[in-house]
Length: 451
Image (cartoon, rainbow, N blue to C red; front, side, top):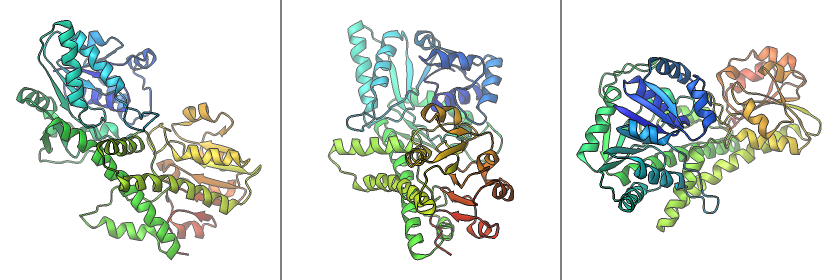
């Protein structure tokens, strides 16, 4: 099939690469010329494992191209994926779908034959209905009579593993109104449904992927409910970690036992400094506001939000409690992105920690494998280093914010020799307290109450 993907962020680019890999012809569209120029040259506008290899492969094969021309893309495509951002409104905190609504007006103006318009962006309930009406109104003003279908096909990708996730989803959700669109989208995804695409480290699964067909509103809601539940698990386990510290219990032991319960599972039960990024915080706030507009005060999710913010504040308190005064002390920060394997610093806990350290008069050294360039735009005064060992040299404490594998694999004996004082304050619990004690570190982590 011929496919247009509008938006070349994490979701849009992962979708473009996946569609090309399973044999479709794809054109990616973005209004940012600089981003399109980079992609045409085989370069990524952000860090994402496996993406560059697929980008070069399909640019060379001719199955993938990029343009700033929406008209060119729409005339080419049978299926149009909408993958543009839905930020939060500054006033009420709901999801802003203005860009999608404007885009759908442009689509209505430009198309001349049947299209399937697939919304992958996270949107409020009934957005599909609204954009259908927008297109129909635009058609009436232009005296057009063209058939089209709206489909809700929410994404469940994780930054840092987006390419893996798009080929190996837990399920595919298709919210659809017509059999014609249902058949087209099912056929489009069939190589993934039948698990015919294999990337490195993908499990060898024989059975077909589950495909769940719903109406459009249900599909829109499923996405928001899934993210709200994941955020709830994260805040829940962080709250339990705080209890563990109070009673002298190790959160890792609790999580191990919980994880074996099939009703609970191990995923998203990692205690730490709290969640960040552009997805969970935004979608959680958007869902809370949407429920409020519907007349339901979702107090449980408001508490999830509060606990997540409080977790950062508790971690900053640990830093203050451990180091006392910070004036003119050299402090090392390891990890700036909100999670490993991405350069995304949006809502990263590192930003709050760095702001605190600077406000207290600390001298800050920092290292991250991917996101120093972006962080330097916000904090140019930091001393950015080339390795964890350069950060450790002469520091009075190391603060771990992101659980990059590079940090887990550090030579801790070397780190200790380089530091002025062997103090590590770990926001991701990447080391065992007993081992750190043997190595001679003062090691402060989260929820490890055992002495």
